[in-house]
Structures are given as structure tokens and as C-alpha cells.
Image (cartoon, rainbow, N blue to C red; front, side):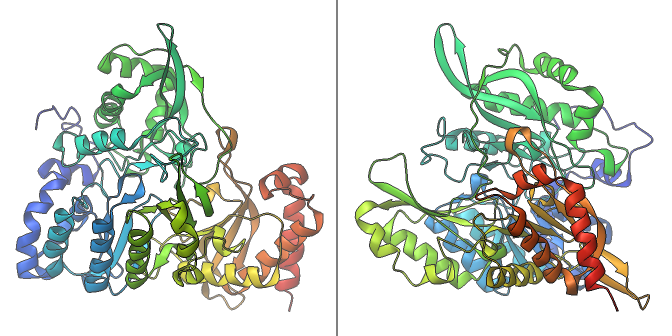
Amino acid sequence: MAYEKIWADNPKLNTVEKLKLEQDGLKIFEEIPYYAEHGFQSIPREKWDLFKWAGLYLQKPKEDGYFMMRVVIPSGIVTYEQVVTLAQIAKDFGRGLYDITTRQCVQFHWITIENIPEILRRLDEVGMTTAGACGDITRNIVGNPLAGIDPNELFDTRPIIKEVYEFFRFNEDYSNLPRKYKMSISASINNASNSEINCVAFVPAIKEIDGEKVYGFHVKVGGGLSTVPMLAQKLDIFVPQERTKDVAEGITRIFRDYGNREKRHRNRLKFLVADWGVEKFKEKLIDLVGPLPESGEDVQGEWNASYFYGVHKQKQEGLNYVGINVPIGRISPDDVLELARVSKKYGNGEIRHCNTQNIVIPNILDENLEEMLKEPIFEKYPYNPKNFLGYSVSCTGNELCNLALVETKGLMRKIAEYLDETITLDVPVRIHMVGCPNSCGQRPLADIGLQGILMKNKNKEMVEAFEIYVGGTLNNGGKFNEKLKGKIEAGLLADVVKELLLYFKETKNAGEPFFDYVGRVGIDVLQQKLDEILSEKTAV
């Protein structure tokens, strides 16, 4: 390695860190062909975690040998050839599951070790990889799914993201980080990349330098969710576009060399930023990368939560993009292939994944738009979805994930469809469901967050249940939603949420969003209403 592992002699290193000192995670790619030839039983148990560096997690139960595979998709943008390859992999090897994640990736399930070399070969043929999708490494770079076509972007970030992505991809200088490390790069004035929840986020900014207006970035560090959610804090620097990669490398180097490697639950970048403070962090960054101008003008509009439903004009004359709903982010490979066909027929074949688990089809000519919108596929994946199913997000849940306590995908869809059948509102309500505190479904950002737990029912049996959180946003720097007291059995959840939303409907102002409503009436009022609902629902 080209760098010194200054932490190597620390006697308090956790067991994962000791394993990584013996073998860099990316080396697992070299061993996969052997394991594929000799079968799952040939993989030593101590190597299971290293498969994360190849974008692979063992599904539950781990001993059965089925993997979840995640593919890296910077900014969520895939070409026609790439999306066809992804769909065919899901069809041939993944039992027909194509899952879009909240970080714009695609996940496959039920992958066996014997098929992994062939899958990696197919991905490589179209310039894709699973490296960096999981593990203690730079994860997929989240960006504006409308990059390059967005009338509301300061500049096109696609070449910048490509440069940064290519620098970190398979770079063993930065493949042994203290923990997962999440980056976003976006010039969208509507914060389409959810900057405040990333370890490091490059956000649009303007600075006058030598009498000229320069478009570049401000930088936020220390965001993240999980059991201790934190909002990223702004560094007092301005980054010209051409220096993005250098600054990204400098921040990553700080995390690599000074991040906590003793306690796995305290080793995200957010804890280092909290311990050091942003001034010390900035000073160390300047020491590594050289002088940077002080921050300039923030360029920020209303947070769009990465929703792009409907038909919209691109910044290119005569072109349009169409945002469609993929309920709960799960779609069949045949339907992906059909969307790819439609995109190719009427546009250039691109598909763009959003961190809301939805899809955008870009570059549709004005003269092709009317005919395209008549395609039958849009009846199944509408561009004008209903208020609840269209704004629901879910993690994988305990169907396939080892960490999840409860089932989520099917339940969230069932609840959203039930709400759409029984409630009409003048505003959408964003509902996020997660199966555990790790919050892959980004529960803290939601208007209503539903977090899975286990609880004892009246018969002293352990059953699946949920807690409710209300009032999350990333507007104006962000605010995480707050927990209401009370545990709701999964079977009662749909009716409890319905009653809470009916109360919202009865007491809200016209056009008032849920977040504004929570701020106006206060948590105590909603807590009292929830107590009443639970008292009625659980009464014998």
C-alpha cells in the first residue's frame, strides 16, 4: 500500500479492523472465482464480511448461501445497454427482483456464489461494478438524477462525479476506511441528493474570485442516519469545480487516518466531526489540500426530496423528462426492459434512478411526448401517482435482511394502497418505513416515519410492531422527525396511521404540508391524538 496505516499498532482495534489488516477488502474479487468453482461451503466464515467490498451481503439465514448484490450507479444514471444488462441479471439470477435503493443503486437477491463471476463479467462489459457498493469504503456517489438536464441546476455535475468515482474505484489507498463512507455531489438548487445526511456533501455555491463569478461547491461534513442521526455541518470553504476530486480525497484521507477504529458503533465520519468540530476539521483539510477560498453564496431553493413526477421541460430546447412511480422501489426485470424499450424508442434509452426509489426517463422530444405517454407501462408505473403510494419509501425488511426486525416492503405498499383508497388530501404525505434503527429507508426525513420493533402482545408473545415518528424535512438545513410514544402491532398499523391522517385532514389549513402542520400544532397535540387512537384500537 502507498500509505502508512497509522492505526495498525492500536491494541484496541475491533475484530473487523484486525481482519482488514490481514487482507484488504477489495482482494476478495481475486478469490471469488475459486469460491465459485468450489461452492459456498469453501468460503471460510471469517471471510463472509469481506464480500461486502464486492457489493455482496449474505441474506438471512446466512448459512443458506444466498447473497444480496448491490451495483454502484453514480448519480443513478444508466445507459440503455446498462439497464438492459441489469434487468437481464435480475431475470437470470435474481428470481425476478430488481430493487431500487435510497442511494440510487440497484439490488439483486438470491444470488449464488457460482453465478457471481458471470454477473461481474456482464457488468464489466457495460462499464459497471459492485465495488464500493458495500463495505468500509467510499459508497455510491449520490447525485441529482437530473444532472445535465435540470433547469434548476447550477452546472452539470456528471463529469465531476465521473472523475471522483473513477478515482476511488478499486483504489486500495482508500478501500480500508473505519466504516462505510457516503458522499453526494449535486448542483441542484433543490437538494435532490439529500446533502445533510451524507458523510460529505458537495452542494451548489457561487463565489466572486478576482472579479469573476465562479460556480462551484460548498462542503458539508458529518451527516448520517442510523441509531444516532446527525445533520451535516458546513465548512467555511468554497471549492471550485476543478478541485472537487482533491477536496474529496482530502476529506476521505482525514476519515481514513483519524476515524475511530475501536468501536464499530462510533466510527462513522459524523462522530469524528462531532469530536473535532468544523473549525479543526477545516484546518486539517487545508493542511492536506492547500488553501481554499472562504465560503461564498449558498444557492438553495425548496427541497424537492428527489421527487420528479410528471412531465417537465429540460434545459435543452425541445426535450422533456418524465418522472414515474415505482411503488416501494421494487419492479420486475420484464417491466424494466419495457421501460428501457420505451426510453430508447422515444428518447436516448437512459434510465435514471432517484433516491426515492423511483425512475426518470429523460430526453423525450416534444413531438414524441404525446405518443409515449400512451404506452401501457405507465398505467402500472404512473407519472401522476396517488398521494400515498407515490410518496412511500421502504427498506428491504426481514424478508431478506439479517438486521431487520420486521417485514416492510409488502406492508408499506399495503398500507399506502389502503390510505389511497380511504383518504383524499390536498397535499402528499411522505411515509418512510424501516425494519430496524439503521434506517436504510431514511426514516428520519419523513413526514411520517414508521420504525419496526418487536414487542410482547397481551398473550406475552413477541410480535412485529412499529413506532411512529413525525415531522422530518431537509429544508432550511434539516430537522429529523420526532418519536411519538406508543408501540403499534403491525396488524393495527394501517388503521392507526389512517386515523392520525384523518385528524390531520380535519385540523389542517388548506394546502398546508404535513411538516408545517406539525410545527404549528406541536408534538403534544399529535401525541394526545395517538393516545386516543391506541386506547380505542387496543380496548378489549
